[in-house]
Image (cartoon, rainbow over all chains, first blue to last red; front, side):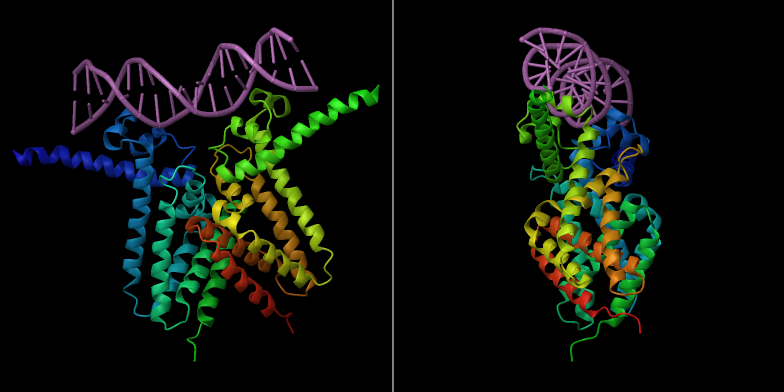
Amino acid sequence: MTDSAAKPRARASEKRRRLTAAAARVLHEQGVERTTLADIARAADVPVGNVYYYFKTKDELVRAALSEHSAHLDELTGELARLPDPRDRLKALINTWVDQRETAARHGCPTGTLAVELDKRADGTLDMEAGAVLRRLLDWAAGQFRELGLSAPDDLAVTLISGYQGMSLLANALRDPEIMTREGARLLSWLDSLEPAA
Amino acid sequence: MTDSAAKPRARASEKRRRLTAAAARVLHEQGVERTTLADIARAADVPVGNVYYYFKTKDELVRAALSEHSAHLDELTGELARLPDPRDRLKALINTWVDQRETAARHGCPTGTLAVELDKRADGTLDMEAGAVLRRLLDWAAGQFRELGLSAPDDLAVTLISGYQGMSLLANALRDPEIMTREGARLLSWLDSLEPAA
DNA sequence: GTCTATACTGGGATAGAC
DNA sequence: GTCTATCCCAGTATAGAC
């Protein structure tokens, strides 16, 4: 009996997951304000009006997309944790960014562009949530710098992530993926130049 | 006769200028998609429906806001031109950014956030126009680096403007103006470290 | 040349059928 | 638990009064 109910439940969460994944992708490509629930439903292959069974409001879908980005970040840092040297982890992170250059040139950083859009809101509902995801990335990077014994690890993290956001924004605005390549190389040699205080 | 017609014409363009200035300000604060024509009209103290006498569509108001930013940029570089040393001009530019830190922390870089939002559009109408303004800033900066006899002036310009966009985005997402101060200081010492190739 | 009243559309949200 | 039909509002744009 409980088992017979399991399948519908499974399908329900399956659709919910499809909607979440679609939201993350479509909101990144089109932005929050220009994306309709119909767009997301279509991308998830779910009937339009049905969306409200899984998400009460559009904002909840945005929130789900943010969790998706956050989970993706966890996955990435989890993989990087296998590298013994923190500096190598940071370098691998930068290489990941450069590998994504075509996407960045077309749509920007998923979290960064979301942060820009949500910060324009007057209502205090979601306007800091994207910032919170960026904050987690900053904290992770600061941890790596700390492990390296560098002073002011938090500031170094800001410099690194700021570099990523800046190059993504410019690559996007100018539609030029090579900006990611060149600035990525610069960040790599910057990393190499950092030495612990004597 | 031609003189008697001058006053209404002057008033007309006066309102047009008020609308343009209001558009630049409100679009920066609220973003394009969340700003209604009524918002801009109210900020410009012009009757709502009247807007269409001066601007045929909302997109034209966005375009006007972009010209405003572009003009503001010209004004700024014009002032900086009075400094004899290109390096001092670049430093003064960075100091201007840091002085604007409270605004940046609240609303981001006017042109950068506009670029992010417009790039989300599928229609090829305005999606590159903000990028064009950023391009002009890049070109100006590259000119300064070239005057200094530095190699790869275009890449240095990208690094500088990317730094500005990155620190503005992070300051905005985290609502922390001090990020502008710290990253600004870093950019200043980076500038000082640059030497012409021997 | 200036402004008002209103038409029209897109899209978020809901009630309720199956 | 799934989906359809529909309501309703916000907001752009226009027609036309003054």
